[in-house]
Image (tube, rainbow, N blue to C red; front, side):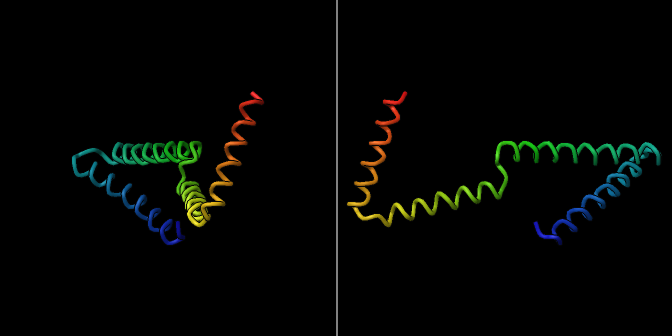
Length: 106
């Protein structure tokens, strides 16, 4: 996220709090109650966002992690496509040998 995006998001959250307050005032809620409820809704929204952020971080579902994983897979796929048939056969033989070796160790 760029700095300007963070500033815009902060401004949007700030303005949404004021808008929620004005909506409560518009439906006839007194000043104090409207302020409390608008802040409660903003804090609840922040807590939900924080919960989703922690969940994505814990499950490694963050955008950067998925981009890195996609890049690694693309590089490996490209390298595999560039192998000659002889190199591919040799690689498959090595993988099969490693699998047999792991099975005997277990």
